[in-house]
Amino acid sequence: MHIVHTIADLRDALSRFRRPAFVPTMGNLHDGHIALVRQARPLGDVTVSSIFVNRLQFAPHEDFDSYPRTLDTDAERLKAAGCNVLFAPREQELYPQPQTYRVHPASDLSDILEGHFRPGFFIGVSTVVLKLFSCVYAGMPSGIAAFGKKDYQQVMVVRRMVQQFALPIEILAGETQRAPDGLALSSRNGYLSPAEREEAVQLSIALRTLGHAALASTPGDLPALEATAMQGLARRGWKPDYLTVRRRSDLLSPQVGHPPEPLVVLGAAKLGNTRLIDNLEI
Figure 1 (spheres, helix red, strand yellow):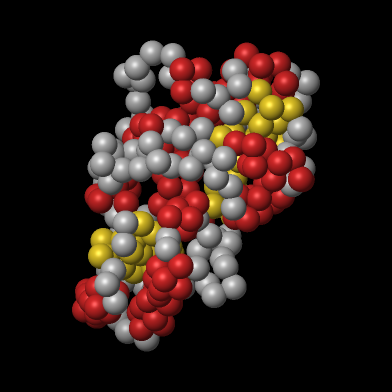
Figure 2 (spheres, rainbow, N blue to C red):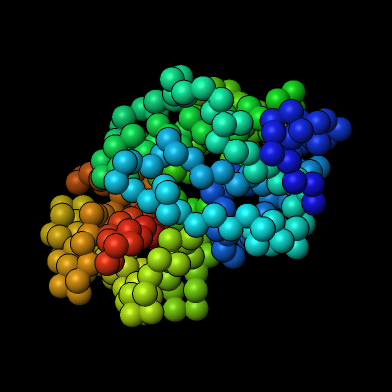
């Protein structure tokens, strides 16, 4: 595996290829990231991953400075998974001057759920992803980019951005990888104490319970079901931001009187000092 730190070296390493399969990450990799690499690898003629902790998507009170940086271990895992090129830029390389040009996704998608509780988050995500796409796919006729479904709303934001900018990139959404007890794998799981780790699976259990109840009810019942799910987690010591049932197509609430549509249950809640997210398609 070739490790590069500059855009010029990345483009040189990719110059003889035509269809990169790209997996962008912030590092501190887990089995979910590795599954994305393995899933993307046969779809391109070179497999690329990036590791960059993106300051733009962190609010001032969030964990940018403490976010784990584990480059050496991550590089070994990527190499073992068959990654060909690892792009690990320093902040000065990707943002040589203040990033005053930014991508602002449409508010109907980016200002709800995660965007409501983390204002500006999807602006930071969209800006860095577009910049990474520019670094990887410059001069390429096509490519693949893989993102995990655990960040369900993020996948939708990126997919819409690709469509609206007519980028020649196919977005691959990889299924959420879970621990044996059902906890969605996340880099932030490492922040959990042993007791919190045992409790953390309750988020996925709450989503599954809410999903079952939603399928047996009507859209008019959902607000009460969602409130009950939130209260259940709160009684266990969580601080939930949302547990909600939404349409997969646009993440808006199902409408009374409309034909049934594919749905997804999404949740975000803080356990101790760690904020976890998860979702379940129903």
